[in-house]
Amino acid sequence: MRLFEWFRKSCKANTEETKEEMKKNLIVGLGNIGAEYAETRHNIGFMVADRLVESCGGRFDSCRYGDMARIKVKNCELMVLKPSTYMNLSGVAVLYWMNKEKLPLENLLVIVDDLALPFGVIRMRSGGSDAGHNGLKNIAAELGTQGYARLRFGIGNDFPRGGQINYVLGRFPVEEASRLLEREDVAVDAIKAYALSGLSFAMTHYNNK
Image (cartoon, rainbow, N blue to C red; front, side, top):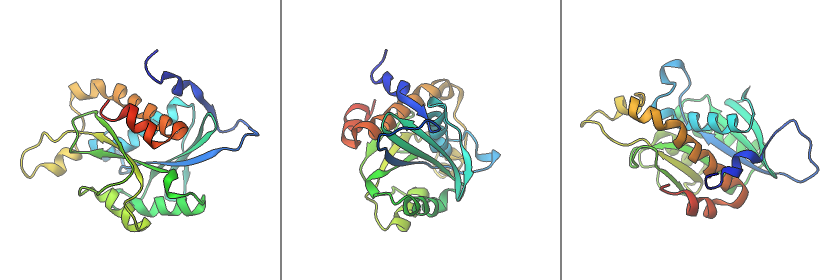
């Protein structure tokens, strides 16, 4: 059993009742809706969110500003959101659900693609610049701060000058696609570690893994 495999076995469907007070986190996977964007590099946030919910036997339902699944990991409730606002307005969905659920900023984690990291590398941070990413930029604008946690999933930067847009909106090549589920599972374990043991613990054990 590989490191922290037990996180995956700790999920419970949200339909189960529990008397224990639940810690609640909002997990937001960034991406664009529509078939033309499905499985593209820029949608890795959606893909990791799907894998997370699948690992816990949950399902997404339509909600305000997106699709949401509510899953449980031990004593934590994870609200997993895939915004329907398109990438450039991701912050609208994030702010709405943060306010509706009365969540503090430290209970937010955003999953985002990152050109600066090699394919599949995971790096978690407590904040930082948007690095030109329009989804992060809009979230910071809506929340009024860049001080929210994010899980950055590396997609590499193997594109010619002027080819960034086509690259991020392109699909993973065969050699990367064959490793994608394994790398998504690492990200899923990191998210569960964050929910159960905090961001510092998750960063220590999963950054660059």
